[in-house]
Amino acid sequence: MENFQNEYLFPEFGVSMNTLRSTHMHAKSIKLGVGDTTEPIPDIITSAMAEYAHALSTIPGYRGYRAEQGNMALRKAIAETCYRNMGVKANEIFVSDGAQGDISRIQMLLGSNVTVAVHDPSFPAYIDSSVIIGQAGKFRKETGKYENVLYMNFGPENNFFPDLSKTPRTDIFFLCFPNNPTGHAASRRQLEELVEFAKANRSIIIYDSAYAAYITDDSPRSIFEIPGAREVAIEISSFSKFAGFTGVRLGWTVAPEELLYSNGFPVIKDYNRIVCTTFNGASRISQAGGLACLSSAVYGGKNAPYIWVHFPGLRSWDVFAEILEKTRIVTVPGGGFGPGGEGYIRVSSFGHRESILEASRRLTNIFKWS
Image 1 (cartoon, rainbow, N blue to C red):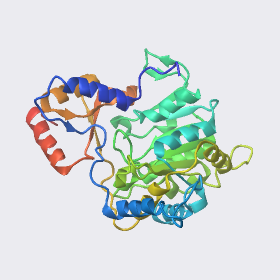
Image 2: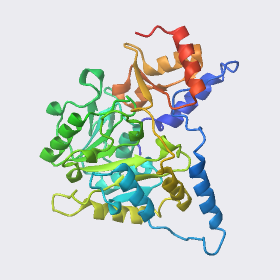
Image 3: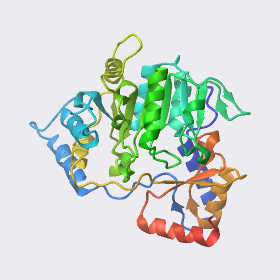
């Protein structure tokens, strides 16, 4: 824990935002930083949760502890809805309280002695959990990186995908597609190369598909669309982005039966033990909402809700402050996602339509975009 350099990005970002906001109380802020999930959850979902919650006050409707791995009906629905024709079985799906908690449970499974790679910039939880578990090593101020973490460059020069021909082997690769924060959705060819790379190097891919519901083109929504991925990948996903479950908390992890340690032992058996030891299962009420969510009443959006904007030669926190001061629009400084994010800001379109249109007008009036 002593190796941490800063607080977790989003609480720290919130403190900075409040400090800046206090000097501009006369203007209304528009939040395009952290995804605004305050749009109402569809009634079909909340009705299912309310009905289940009310039933808990009756003798026939009361339920005690739930299965740590999740409601089997929900696990089957996830397999049939999100992984149709990919070979994913219900018993390989572990329902959880969200993708971020699963990242830490997977880190506990992997332990402190593995080598880890992340894309740079990246979602902070990948690196922060590596620090907590003891994988990351010392922080080097001169580079802005932890010494034992491989930072894979994700920039426009390589189409926001690692150059695998120049990537050293590590035991674990944390990857997110559609990507947070850059918004890039990996192509099928890119993921095919990734799977082949992992197989050749006997590495495990931890694939975060939390934004898969935004994909509308032919980009793969899951790593398991790629042949051979079941031998090298674990996938994490979430209900938060396509159903507004951020406060309700519901997600899942897929651990395929074909994924084996070097001694031939199935990884899924160890992950099941981790889950059963550290977690008593997702809320039954949330899972009732998840079942309703997978009905035809819920729809996704574009490939990703994020815009990754480059300001060459400028510090991302300075750009963040300038945009907030001149437009009252809240973004997220790219430097908070790692050294590869310096010079960028992340803008989220995950908010109210009226707010997005107003933000566009303000930005157009202040900045010249090219």
